[in-house]
Length: 358
Image (cartoon, rainbow, N blue to C red):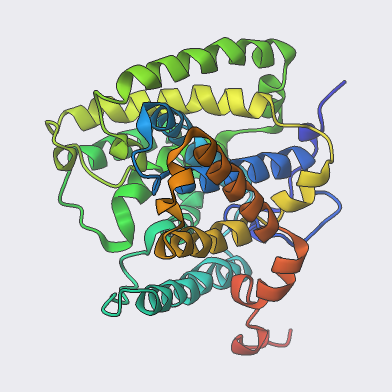
């Protein structure tokens, strides 16, 4: 039986969020929505591990393992959903209202949050995205370049060369976190090249079975690598020299991480359910969970919840992960989306000039 991913995807211009705006449609692919929900859960869990005091080698191992693929698979899906994007006036308007406007709103909101919770001098810097907000301008820029990647030969190879050059260079600057924009670019371009049959390939039973030893091996490698390297490589925020390595290592590590991310992304997608489940509707609201869970994580840090004695225990670390997953699940739900729809998905119809009469 042919899997449901073979159905035609939703129109690309309708998916302005990170990576998909949650306006419900009957033709949404449950496989993609399930994948986005599970990916955003991993993102939230990873962010909950960052403030853990003395997290230990085991937590760092899982952190390294998850950070190898959780944002790449998120970006690959974003690219896949952008395959039919054409830069018409309607599409550009939706890009601005769906990405640029929410970015400005949440940049201000997080700045006020920081000032009200212990950092009164925290600067408002629109060109320096706050923590997790880097993804919105990145997706905006990636989507603007979509027509180019749809026309050029060997697009993934070219994007990988650009990413490697960025990793070699350490003076790109922090504006809009262009290092991340460039170093994560190959995953978006790869998503543009994918077709439904590619997702069918990773859904085969042989891939699902083979993913188990591959993930176990990846965990073993991560456990070995934790004391020998830095997880900052996975953030794609710095050049090689900024991480204390020779510049040329950026050209080696970038394609190596790309290959590792692809393998683990395939393993992840192999286990994503292919039918409509309770999580499917939540996958349509990942933009909300992504933008809002930062307030919860940072709020818990400000309240000293990560300093509680129980958090330093193995049970406490598991509890922190479960709470993070539960929180981001709630934030992707319909009640939260109804409350925050006007700031996450502003329509701004009144700001738009009426169409000229034919």
